[in-house]
Image 1 (cartoon, helix red, strand yellow):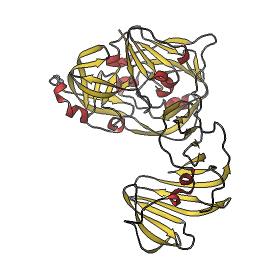
Image 2: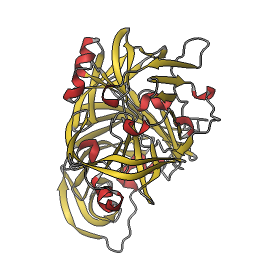
Image 3: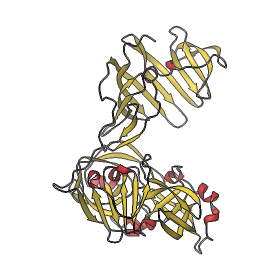
Amino acid sequence: MGRLPSLIAHWSGTIDDNGQIVKYDIVAARDGRYRRTYVFPLTQIAEGSNLYQDWGQDENGNVQLTPAQRHESMDARLVKLNDLRFQSRGSAVSGVTTIDGHQAYVVNVTMQDESAVVYFDLNSGLLDGADVGPETIRYLAYRRFQGVAVPTDIQESGPADAASITVNNVSFVGDTKGEFDPPAQRRPQFPAGTTQVALSFDSPRGLIVCPALVNGHPARFIIDSGSTTSIIDEDAAKRFGLVTGGISHVEGAALMTGTVARIDTLNLGGVVYAPFFVQAIPLRLPSRLSHEGIDGVIGFDLFSSLVARIGFTHYELRLIQPNAFSYAGTGAVLTIDTSKRVPLFTTTIGDKDQGTFTLDTGSSATLVLYPEYAKLHQSDFSEPTENGTTIASGAGGDLPTRLYKISRVKFGQFDLTEVPTEVIMRETGAFGQTTSDGLIGSGALSSFGAVFLDYANNRLILER
């Protein structure tokens, strides 16, 4: 392979992922520290680790931090499977074949507890590729950078997708102080001299719908803590003249495909994001909401950068700068996990059954359970209601649910009793995920005088 000139490398190239061309830039160290940036047609995202914290930053500057895990060294990231270690016991050379015009030894190995075949070029000894289960990896070209052989044309394919990766340049560098540390969380701009603003919201079908200005044009958005991203209807994006680019996939009640749109200024009650990136898709709201003039959904991007106080009694949403917020009230303070870009918390249903639930202000339901959890906890159900089935709706379509009641759901020191509950009958789209056991919607949250979502301190606060 060649002798590594230093313990840190910097390289860049492109990825062709099913027709979308993405540029990437990587700085990595041999001890596992790294920073990787992906540049899309309109946006960019980044991730990395400084060995103490793993971090990710999305297109709107939201930063998520988690305790550091063990990561690949710079060697493995750069030379790929040429850094593969496998034991000779249980491995065997089964012959010689031709791979992309090169003669190669065929070697059967075990890779990550899975049977695999790797191909070593007869002349160079470098890998020509590998077959791992249904996936194939081919190294079509190599180039030496400061004496180190690096695969520069990589083809990866599987049952559902394919990608082509190029490496355009590599350099070996000395340590750069702070290169691998997480960036600062981006914050929106507040009106001068203020640390919070209040805006009134409408509540069609129990949802939170707020007015906004998109590049100065009036718009209406659902405020949805259950959405990992922010969305604008593709027709609204055209109406507002937004610049769009790239390919976007959003999981709702069904998988929706669209593009990314840039809002130069998004104004929520005087709080300004400039710019703000959203996924432009056909929103396909259920018919009972389609006449409400809703242009999109604002999700994780809002809650990650602010503290939000939702007052259902007076239909008021208060947005607060995190460094100006402290709480000394008597409400229930619950710990939430936002690592999946939605607020998850653990609580008790019935007498003693534990469950992890997504707090979803974008659902008008009180409690929604996914089928597997519901099946295992039927003792918590009352008899089905007289109207035994209904239709739950989300962006992208409807899906059937069965109606029950749960005897009790705990929220810290507060209880809700005889809780109307919907059990999803057919898991699909976002409702087929396994992040949680179900959803707590605005039907439950509206039982409280105020709901605080404080992502900076990983807490949900409920007041009566």
